[in-house]
Length: 377
Image 1 (cartoon, rainbow, N blue to C red):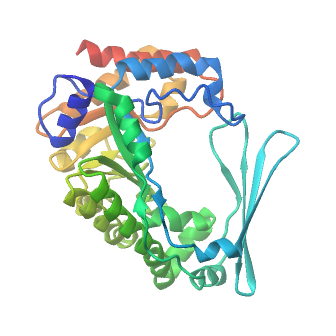
Image 2 (tube, rainbow, N blue to C red):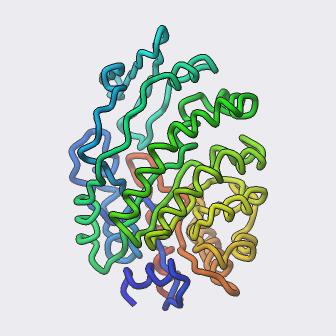
C-alpha cells in the first residue's frame, strides 16, 4: 500500500499492511526556508526530522480553509491592533475593541525561540465584559470557501499522505476569551450567559463547516476545543452541555459529505469518553497515556474502538526526555494496544511536537525509532 491508501483505509476501518505513523505537526512540509524570525524550524537541527517525515511517515498535512467574498465584518471598524518588537526580540500585540462604553483589551507575546503565543491579557475579564461582547454587531453569514490552497497541498502530497482540515468548535473560541480560571468560574456559575457566547460563535462556525464539507467532501477533519471542558477544568456534566450540542452539528455536516471527523482532546478521557462518542465522531486524538491522561489506550479501544480511528498515545515530553530504549518500549506498547482485537484502526502519533528552536539529538533519535519500529512490523 502507498501512504495515501494506508491512511484512507485506516479511516474507513479497512485492513492495512501496517499501522500508519505520523509526526503530527511535523508533516514533511519544508518550512525551513521561511525567513520569518519567529520561524523556529529555520534552525538546521530541524531539517533531518522534516526530511524523515517527508520520506518515511504517513503524512497528514493539517491546514485551514479561508473564506472569500464574505460580507463586511462590522467589528473591523471597532477593532484596533498594534504590534511592536521589544528589546528582547519578542513580538507584542495589543488588540482593543470598542464595545459600547467599554474597551475590551487583549495582549499577547511571541518569543523568537519558542513556537507559541502567550496571552498576557485576555479580552474578557468578567461577566460585564462578556455581556458587552455579546452586544457587538455580528458579521452576516455568506461567502464561499477558498479551496485553492488546500487542493494545492493535496496535489503536493500526491500518494504520500492526505490533507486534513483543522477547525475549532465553538468552545475553542469562547473559552480563551477569558483567563483559564475565570473561564471555569463563568462556565460553572453563568451557564445561560456562556451558552449565549457559544451560540453566537456557533452560528458562523456551523455554517462555515457545512460549506467547507460540501466543497471538500470526503476529507479528514480535526475539531479542537473540547478539552477546555474536560476534567479537572469542568465536570463531565458540563462537557456534555458545552461540547456535545455544539460539536455534534459539525460532525454531522462533515460526515454528511463523506468526511471523517476527529475530535482532539488532551488530558483526561475516562469520564467524558461516552460524551465524545455521542458527537458521532469517527476519530479521536491524542489519547495521552497516564500520567498526562487517565486511561490506557487499550481501555479507549475497548470502549470506542469500533466507532473511532484512534490517533496518538505517545507523549511529546517523552520524545524529548526519554532515553531511546525506554521510548521504544512505549512505542511498542502503543502499537500493541492500538491494534489488538476488533477496532476501526490506529495511527501511531505523538501528542504534539517540540516547540523550541533547537531540536535535540535525543528527540530526533526517538522520532527515528518510531519509524523503525513500525517499518519492522
